[in-house]
Length: 367
Ligand code: SF4
Ligand code: SF4
Image (tube, rainbow, N blue to C red; front, side, top):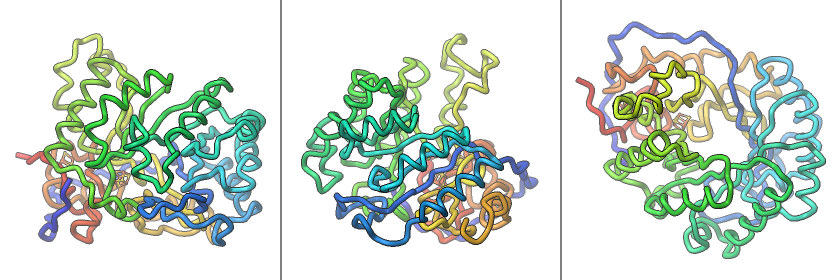
């Protein structure tokens, strides 16, 4: 993946397609920046345990109340490592009592028998574990922790023994992308419900891994491979934050046998949405309560300590701007897939300082 500087974007002649403002389907909440590992190349800007800046328990409870009273999004509790927040189970249990759906996102390194009991006690039903390789050699190379892979597999065994639904997630760079078939095999063998893939966005918190980028051609090849695994072989795998996957899906849907094509089966609602979801279906709340469109597009919209979350979500900048695909620039402007894809706005911002400019890594050239 190569992010090049682009010329000033050409604004789309297409009529503005402002989406109706519905609430986010899910919110990624960085409950803490703490992480005891503190890898040099951390893509989450981690801080040592005990560092100030995280919301207090009282403030965190108020945020949960505000989300539960309005949009009721699925709440992904993340961090560098959320298990290092001392009140994490108290918060998760509170959110679940408020009938929010909660997903705990962890590297599973700290997942021991005590944690397993606390997870069950808090009634957490959904866990996402990051695994960036099918072996210790690759997985541990992303971390300053040589036993990370073995610890994650042990943690994963405990999750499975507790009968809790879990998925795996991997961040892909040039270092591990060729491992994808092995990673999918491992994910199926371990009994994961889903393998979620994310091609690193070399901006914001992904900048630390910028040296290992996947080039555009390799990126397109693997997106096509994921399409085949997901739709032709029906393996539990999906990609997020590769908006062009929406374009690949639309371009290749006719290759699918009719009974395997959700669109021709009248089941479009079963399709995941692959385009950029920032400001449409999701947003990111940082550890200090600042709300952003996504963790890689750090354009602050407000802070939940000063304003209600719903008010921030309704704001014109940056959320309203992102929702208006009529404002897309460069080749994304006239592109027929723009309403579904939108291109990665974080990559556009990194390449041109304008988050509505064209996505610099998409191969497609609109006619
Ligand atoms: S801008 Fe959109 S596609 Fe890019 S990382 Fe953020 S949410 Fe994902
Ligand atoms: S040109 Fe832009 S909108 Fe069109 S498919 Fe590529 S990234 Fe998506």
